[in-house]
Length: 208
Image (cartoon, rainbow, N blue to C red; front, side):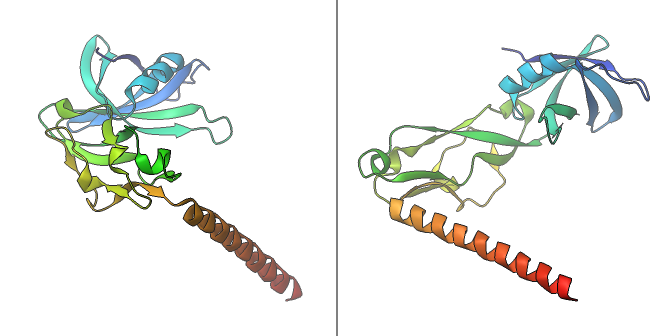
């Protein structure tokens, strides 16, 4: 199914309505353009497209493929306030972040009481725009014993996609509950130690 998005040119210093979203369009050979989008339309589309699916942008009657490259959110309200749209050349490779989806059943989790820990939720890749996928599946059934891990080099990626990360990097692990608990305690102690250090520094400054 083709993902479509409508856009209009935003005039210089034009104030946007609450229902609109500021955007910029750029790309190789593309003059940077300030745009305005319908907020609800973009919100619904981005929930489906993410940053790794091609979108057909309709601007002044012309349609061309784009990727969402960057999003800015309001710090307090967390709503979108600006989006960068990258016009792609279907013959040139692009860099993107593709989400990972975990599938299957892990013996170490279900039968041995292991805790499923994820270290990576997406992969940095490079490929032709036409080779992009909305997710890469990770089968966790190989996690049979406590301590077992799946690394980037263990998964199969679709044809045409080149991974831009260290292949030995751990994606997920079936961790022993005891180790997880020890880690949480250690992190908590480290946080408290930092707080005490800050208090000590504050007192030193007050006595100067």
